[in-house]
Image 1: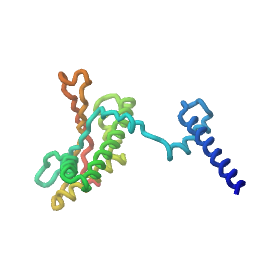
Image 2: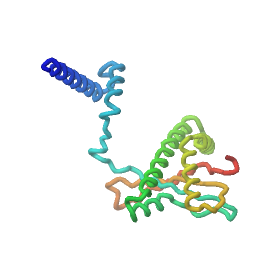
Image 3: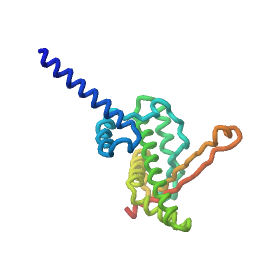
Length: 206
C-alpha cells in the first residue's frame, strides 16, 4: 500500500511540474523558448486552460453593426428589413424562447461576413488602382466566399419563415456600421455611419 502511495505521489508531482513548466512556456513571449517547445505547450494549454481576457475586463464594442436586406418580387423591391429587430423583440418578450439564439446567429454571421469583407478590402487596396476596380474585386471575391453564401442561406430561411407564400427573385443586403465619436467628443459630435453594400443575389443565376 505504501508503495502505491509513493507512486501516486510521484505521478502527481510529475504532473504538477509538467503543468507549471507548460504554463511558463505558454505565457512567455514567443522566441523565449524553442518553437517546438512553444507548440507543445500550446497543444496542452489552449484546449484546457486558454482564457479570453475579456472575461475579466470586458471592453465595449468600438463599432455597432446591423444587417439590412430587401427582396425583389414581381411587384418590385420590398422595404428594408432588419432581421435582428424581430429576434430582439421576441427575446425581450420571452427570454427563454429561441429568439436569443437566432439573434446570436445573426450577430455571428454578420461578424464573420465583415471579417471576409475587410480582408478583401485590404487586398483590393494593394492590387487595384481605381475605385471601380476595387469594388469589382471585392464583389467578385465576396460572391465566392463562404460567409456571403452563409448570409444568403440565412436570409432565404428568414424569408421562408416570415413570408412563406412570397416568391422572390433577388436579395440585396448591406451592413450598416455605426462608429461612435471619441468619448471626449460624445456630447458634441455625432456617430459616423457607413453603409457597406454587397453583391445582389439573383435566384435565377443560382
